[in-house]
View 1 (cartoon, rainbow, N blue to C red):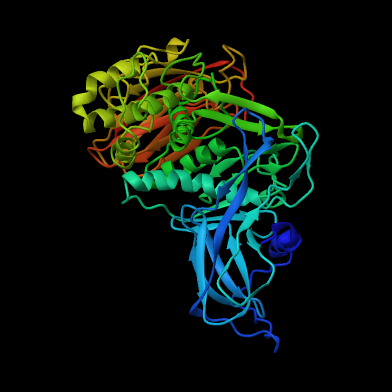
View 2: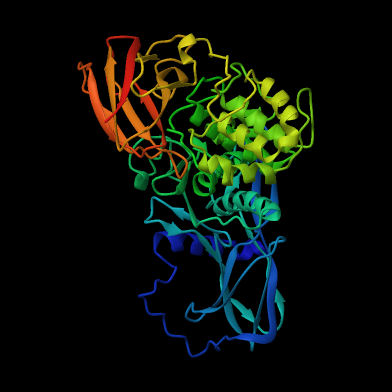
Length: 552
């Protein structure tokens, strides 16, 4: 087959599916078959087979290398054989790991192929959030089939020219299939070791219009590539010469890792901005470290996270997820978390790393103890769960954790921790409230200042404190005094995400004391998270609070 001759028709149909709704709806009536077109039915001896590929552009240097474009198989993609006369579906299948498909028909006729950016198992769909969530698909022109025929199809990147002087001047047909294939890489790896894990349906929103602006996602204003826990979907950047992520395969799997964590495990992360070197809330640090680590596990031995951007996608960065500079080691560092997790997984051991467990035992902790821990999800809860499941490896686990300036973990609360991240008020990790006992003082750094450049953000470790208490009656009273405004959440963990049973947000300039009567269950432990209100300009850089608790 001369692909160049059919390329314009392929691209035309690719565009029409999204812009004019070529994919038939359940309410539409198919066009009548022209009398000159013979009917096509499946199950005969005439085979239409071939291989489906997409252009893959490497981002391994932190820049997209269009000059080194290669072709990769469209693995596990959903394909339909259409009757060219009325576009009715004759048969459907999914490609194998070589991108191969095979259909059979009973007699000669005219056919088309419709190739969806979709996998059926696990069910993943790539769609356009700026065009009514239309699903991406590639439709070939009509083929006249008189005997068994091989029809290979290649989805092109749309790029023309060199890295230094090229541009997208064709439809970016390959992009949806590149993202789909990155997700297939990690899902198939997980299924190979833990086949019982079930992935829920995932929709990935990608558009040429998706840009790093906060606003309306239907206009492409998605802030950044991210996992949205509210919709349980991914949103991926696609604006050429600004920031495109479809070929940044580590980015795709990182965001998918958040989807996995949320759906098979538990994530208590509050989200928000973060970067390497930050000292963040411990749940966020673990969650982001996990996203980074699983991307390295997916593409092992490629441990380099690349994120391309800028004119011709020739800017960006590239970092090692195993040995990147960890400038603030500790329980609050996503770099520390990612390197601990990857060292638990990988077979290449360095000083302090004597573990090579693969991804299976990590998944076991995520689906087990990490999902049910009474503490917030963090490196403490994960490592404690790993040691419970692997008691014979406790010494090696302790040694690895110590390389990141984290004390030996003996429970999910980090009670032995001595690394305060540069501020003594960060410890203890959890303060304990004794009902009927003395007041418990804590401090937050609530102003937008620059103490080590990490204070002042709502998700910084300095601005989040956790307290614990065990209820003895059906109502527990907390009394809080403060020198500034704050937000308070009270949760009973162990059976789901950090979904507060009780929330309060104080008014600007009103400092209490505040009395909160919280419905509780006797004998159950509750976690209090408190942080300053990031929407208020604070009078005080350091906010001091006291907690007292009584049974009611």
